[in-house]
Image (cartoon, rainbow, N blue to C red; front, top):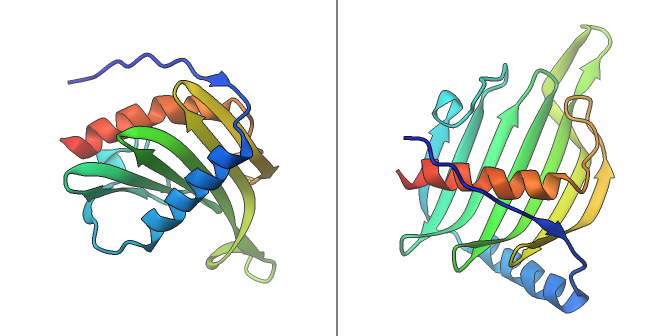
Amino acid sequence: MAVMVGCTVTHAQVDSAYIVAVDGQVQKINEVKDYELRTLENEEFLEQMTDGGGDLTGMFKNGELIKVVKRVGLSSCVDITEYYFRNSQLVFVSAQGLEFAYIDSTASFDPDVQQVTMEGRFYYSDSAAAPVLLKGSTRCGGAPTKEWAAMFAAEVARLKDLLMR
């Protein structure tokens, strides 16, 4: 059963106190190790299968979704997006793009050697989003833009729905 969710995200400035508070919450979430995990792989969540596959992991505490990690592998890159929640509402998204090292002697990419080449940090408050860091790019996905804030807000509804089944 498909669920349609409408989402309007406006770009707003968030104050430094809000950023500090969310960063503190993100740090605390990342320190906890006893979450209930639910993981989906490849076609279970990917609308189109990639050559590097992917996995989607939801981290739950007392039945509440706290964090979602989406990893999608491409032929020469990996995209990792982390979604953080407070009271079931999206408050932060971290997006990273990692590129595989290219080995001239074999004319191939080495997935064991990866470098972060793109980062985006997006803070959400009510229906407003503020991209605070947009840096770098990857050969697979390009550079992050402020429009990604709306894309992440819309995508997280689909991902939450899949993880809650």
